[in-house]
Amino acid sequence: MKIAVPTKEKNQIDNHFGHCEFYTIFAISDKNEIIAETILESPKGCGCKSDIAFDLAKMDVKVMLAGGIGEGAINKLAQQQIQVVRNCKGDVHELVEEYLKGNLLDGGASCAAHSHDHEDGHVCSHN
Image (cartoon, rainbow, N blue to C red; front, top):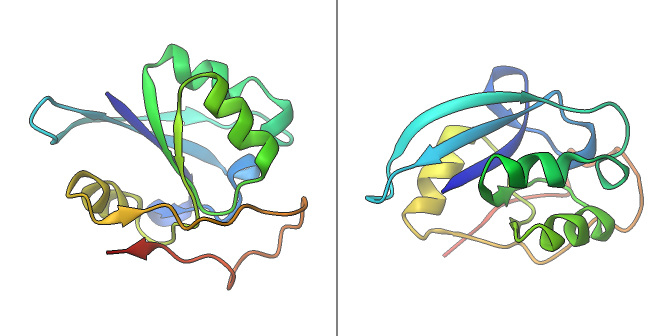
């Protein structure tokens, strides 16, 4: 299994899925451990209008840990059987570790529009 995280500088999750600098793709072992990490360049433009969901599915990505993400992008990812965990914030490596421990839950809110001011609006939900 693989987990994708929209990423910006210094290994931080990007607050907007469709405008990230790149995606960090984590390969996960059968023992729920990170065994590899690769970078996938982000296509230019909005994520919901790109082929990124198809490209991620071809790479065997099954989970997307996202900051802000709109319904259009969620639908495209769902069509490729990629589960989305919304409203995450912080270091991408820590987020994946928390997800693998079962401590990271979907934040439950999607972006309503293509606004880019998400700095304070998104937080991870931990149980």
